[in-house]
Structure formats: C-alpha cells, structure tokens
Length: 300
Ligand code: SAM
Image (tube, rainbow, N blue to C red):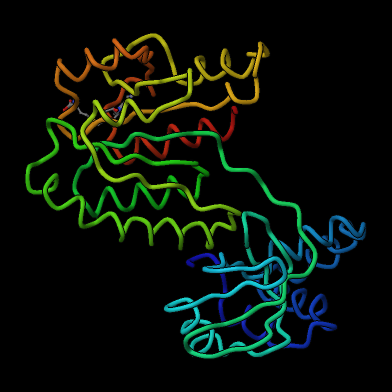
C-alpha cells in the first residue's frame, strides 16, 4: 500500500457516488504538481481516458466472496475498510470479483463484512504469462522477491525446495506458504492487478518441473555467457505458429543462494530448459527475479 495516499483516497471515496468523479480528481490534485494537473486533465478530456484515470486512482479490492451482483470483503480486509478507512455505504471502489474488475458501491459496512453492489465491468490488464519457479532462500529476501514479482505481474509462483536450500528453511517453508499467499494478495491489490498469482505449495525440483506446462522454459543461470534473456524473449515474441496465444506463456527458474547442484542442472536439461543470462554480474536471487520479470514485462 506504499504508493497510495490512503488518507486522500478515504476522503475522496467517502463522498456519495454521484460526486465520485469530482472527488477522485480532488484526491489526485493533492499528489500532482498544481501547474501540471489542469493541462493533464484537458488532455484527458476524452471519456475513455477519464475512465482509465478513475480506475487508476480509485482504491482496488479483491473480493473474498461474490455472487453475480454483489461482492464481499471479510475478516482483516473488512476490518481495515471499516475501522481505518471508515468506509460508508454509497462509496465507490474498484472491486475484482469472479475474475472481473467492476466499479462497485458499498451497500453495508461492519467490522466483519463489507458488501458491495457490483456495477459496470471495467477494462483490466491481463497478468504477465510467466510461471516463476523460485528456489526457497532466506525468508525476508524471498518474501520481498515474491511481493515484487507480484507487482511486476507474474501469473504463478512455485517455491522450490532446492538441494542447496538451507535445511531449516526447507522445513519451515510449508508453514510459511499461507503468509506468502497473503503477501501476493496484498501486493495484487496495491499494484491494481485483477488477479492474484497462484502460489503453489513448496516442493522439490522434480515435482515443481512437472507443474510447468509452458513449452518455453528459461533457466536463469549465472554460468551462461552468451544467450541473454532479452534475446530469448525476442525470439519467443516472434513466435506465431499454432496455438500462439497458449505458447506465449513462459516459465522462468531462479536458483538458491548457493546455486543449483549438478544433478538439478541435469534435471533442467532433461526437461528441455534453455539457459539464459542477465549479464556478467552475479545477482542475488531476488534481484535476478525482479530483473528477469522487468525484462519480460518490457518484451512480452
Ligand atoms: N551459484 C552462485 C554462486 O554462489 O556463485 C550464486 C547463485 S545466485 C545468488 C542465485 C540465482 O540467481 C542463480 O541460481 C540464478 O538463477 C540467478 N542469477 C544470479 N545472477 C545471474 C545472472 N547474471 N544471470 C542469470 N541468472 C542469475
């Protein structure tokens, strides 16, 4: 939630639905250089552009439960809306429900449940079609990497218990996975995604490889010297053969702090993974994940 001015958002959205556009603009003015804002709004006079601006500035929630016409936030999310943001009936937010993004109006508020009426569907960005296999490493670094991978659009993350994952981390990983699912949910809302990436249960490399259904599999390897990730992606984007849409999906694997063992490297080779480099420097695993996804979002 770092980049959003929650106070301004809460003030803006505390108004009735008929005044929503005006107040969302007000919230935006507080964050924009005054001299630039009128020019920006003039350029955005087209109705579609304004709709995009509203969608960018309105706070977004991912519903816990939904029907065809309503959606609800429950538990911590409801408590946050009710107590911290002091939500009230009539306020307008963007809500993701049933996999679609809607403009939504609060019907009822309690500490336990906030219920929205779902209004029109809004345009939404698709996730980056990237399945990330991420070796488990120090949890604070790993969790930071998972959060950033979510912001950058990764569709699925499989935590891998690599041979060189420290033993105590491998043993504790199964209990941390619920926390990782909460992290991706919050990061998805914060980065205004329409979906939440799937986080698989942590598992050894062999079973993690069996989960990958993309034909394009790239192993990020600091030992590779020629084949860059960018070059591999450019070849990949030019693909327009049969079932091109499905085949645009990509799998990326990032190793643990001590790297993969020779046996694990052999497994990758047997499963058709291609080695790619991010350049001559050895990056921390979480840096490699972020750099790789940033390159994917620029080139895919
Ligand atoms: N085995 C390495 C060592 O100790 O010298 C370090 C592994 S590195 C900290 C962790 C992971 O980040 C690697 O397994 C690889 O997936 C990725 N990585 C780091 N630098 C990279 C680079 N320059 N190109 C591609 N992948 C890289």
